[in-house]
Every structure is written in structure tokens, then in C-alpha cells.
Amino acid sequence: MENKKIVELFAQSAYANGLKWNNIVTKQYCPYIGKKCNKVRKSEPSVSIGTCTVAYGEDNDNVIICPHRLLENNQIFLDCIHLLALHEPGNELHILSEVSIPGGSVDYVLVSAKNGQVKDFVGIELQTLDTTGSVWGYRQAFLESKGVKRLSFNENAAFGMNWKMTAKTTLLQMHHKIATFENLSKHLVLVLQNCLMDYMKQEFSFEHISATPKIGDSFHFHCYRLLAEKSRFHLSLQERASTNADGIAQCLGLKAEAKIALGEMLKMLESKISEKTLLKL
Image (cartoon, rainbow, N blue to C red; front, side, top):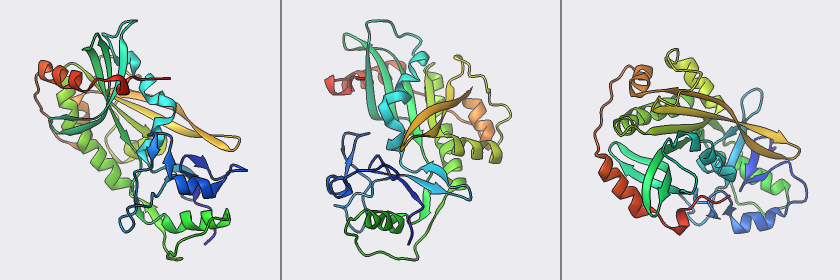
């Protein structure tokens, strides 16, 4: 099985020269989360998959399949600071993960705090493409080409992109969550790759979505492109758009509603703030 599919593995470019792939695979380290990659094989929980990005489609577009890949240099959080209307110089910025709210949980909440008290916050959801089939065979073939001893795998295994289910599930989740943030007069941001955004525009009703983002809108799309730079790749903010709870519902032909007390939300966020959550550059 010739490798033409693996683009990034354990945050390293498949096109970079001089990398010690034996060491990389042994460590199984993900720099985006600062620990061992937590995407593991169901049949082998001790083995991290590590695949960040694959080439897919007739044009071999670079498609991100792991949400952690979007955490590069904390740029997505820096790009949300302008939505913290009550943030002031001197306030600390904290990144809180997996925050529970009515309708589920939010991947991250960027918090502006002073003396341990939350002054403002913005919710941030990450979404990448889900795959069908298996990328494992291509991963193993790539590593073998780099001199790494491979495990057995199915030579005929293939994978696809679950465009429809990913897009629909994402919008449904946003529909459940945005009403909570809108009720609190706060913002919720969906961070995604340009190819997924393009698919949503094509398959769902997006005519009412403002291509010129408005601070007053509660929901914001932050769309990133993965750019090649020599033998490495980096994220670049390509497009922003915005709407509100009714706008997300209109995409799906649904209605949304959720209630939560602001004081209750602030108390919960303040309980999660610590030195470990500080946004560091």
C-alpha cells in the first residue's frame, strides 16, 4: 500500500526530512495537548493513532481529522479575544476545557478574569471531519516507508470522509448550545476547517449567515485553512461569519431554547480557574 494519504502524524509533517520516526512513534506525543495522543485504537488502547491530517479527494486536499490539530500555537483562542467585550488590560486569560452547560458541554471556554473573578467569557467549539473506514493501513504503510517496524494490517482497507453526518451533527449541537450563550449575552465560536465550512454552505441554508461578522451576533464561525510552508503546515484564519440562535435554527429548520442563570455560570467557571488554565504564549 503506497502512502499518498498521510500528511501529518503526531504533529509532524510526512514531507519533512531528517525526522526520527522510530522515536516519534515510541513517544506518541501530541504537542497540541502537551501529552500522549489520546486518540487510541479500540483493539489496542496502549497504541495512539496519531494521525492529524490526511490527503483526500481527487485533488488530494489536506483534511484535518483530529480537533487537537486546531490548537496550534493557541491561535484560535487569540482570535476570539475581540469577543470578550468586558476584557480589560491587566485581566488574566484562562482556557478552560470541557465545560458543562445545558445541552451538553463546550470544548473550551476562554475566560477573562481579575483576582479570580470572571469578567467575561466566550465558548469555543472545535470541529474536524469524521472519517469512515480506516486510515490505519495508510499510517502503517507510511511508517514502514520510514523504516519503522509495522504491525499487521489490512492491505485493502480504505477510508472516506463522513461529510453529511459531520456537518449535520455539528449544526445540531450548535443549535442545542447557542441558545444558552445567547441567553447570557455571550458568544459561542465554532472553529472549523475551510473544506467543512464550504460543505455546510453547499448543503444547508446559509444565505442568511452574515459574511461580515458582527460583534452583536451570539454565534461566530472561525474558518481556518491549512497552508503548506516548505515541509511544514500551519493554520491560517481564512474566513469569519456570524449569526444568532435563530440563524442556526434556520439552517436546520428548527427552533432552539435554553435557560441558565448567569451567576450560576460564572460560579462554575471561577471554580475551574487555576495556574494551569492560564493562556500562555
